[in-house]
Length: 101
Image 1 (cartoon, rainbow, N blue to C red):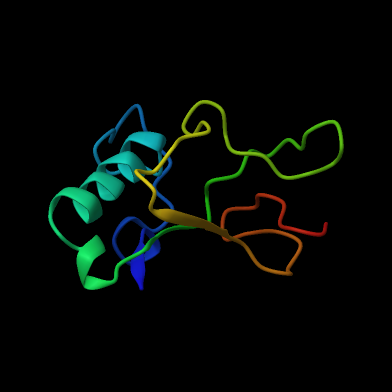
Image 2 (cartoon, one colour):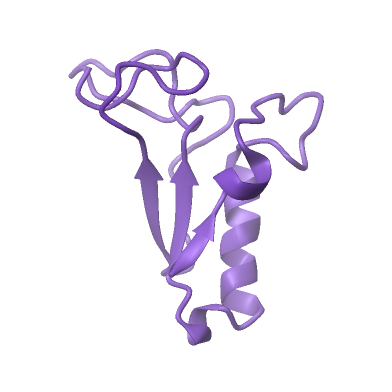
């Protein structure tokens, strides 16, 4: 089980206008803290699921998707597993490239 951003935050990437509710490292760190500190982890909540709108429009040198550097960086999630979700379609909900394309 885990916490998924999409149900509450959808694809809010306007971090300058709405920093508390945008898809960003701060949001996922806060949710990881909540799982760990509020006892959810002990109840079986193991994952922070980063669903859509996490990736940059640009790929790395090997052609792989990468996090949007202005909003997301590599982070350690208090031993809580994390999953980055995408799909097999060529573009996500806001036009970012998806896995395999």
